[in-house]
Image (cartoon, rainbow, N blue to C red; front, side):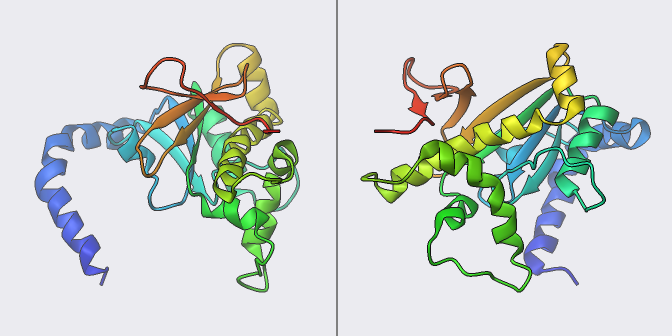
Amino acid sequence: MLPQRLVDGYASFLEGRFPDESERYRRLAQSGQSPKTMVVSCCDSRVSPEVIFDVGPGELFIVRNVANLVPPYAPDENYHGTSAALEFAVQALRVTDIVVLGHAQCGGIRASVAEDAEPLSPGDFIGRWMGLVAPAIEKVGPRGDRTMGDYLRQLEFASVATTLNNLRTFPCVRILEERGKLKLHGAFFGVATGVLSWLDEATGEFRPVMDKPGRVFSCAPVG
């Protein structure tokens, strides 16, 4: 049997939300999904794109992994779960927007610079995966006299920009973006504050989607 919390949640869904959206589910079952937006999000349980963007079934195509990363294009015979999801979203679903959603207090980002980090298993899957953050670490530079909190926040910001760059190494993404048929977006969610920011790639700054004008957060190195 499933955990009781999930059974209770399903019962609530079945009695409450499902009746209100049964027609939508019926249409989705008959005609298939056609979301316009793909979201690359962290698998952190505190960051749920469906909740943050208040969307219903069929509206977002979501791929979640540790630290919301996308590896560079690599057409080899290895297993590529995130790349497969990207390929399907762009080539089959024809999404028009891809959002890379970073977040505060990301455990993956912290692990990528932890000097005392040890593999959690012989495979060291997390350590190898977090190697994708290396360009962001190089961009942000040494920690110096920054607090660990400030340093990690800049790495979280820079990692979003790095993932956008990696997305553009995929020919299908680069070509469609150049043709104006696909747009890439960087975003960042503050877990404690609920503030959602978007990345202005022209300036490298994150600006709150809904906040006072002029308030920005830089992902560029400080000092």
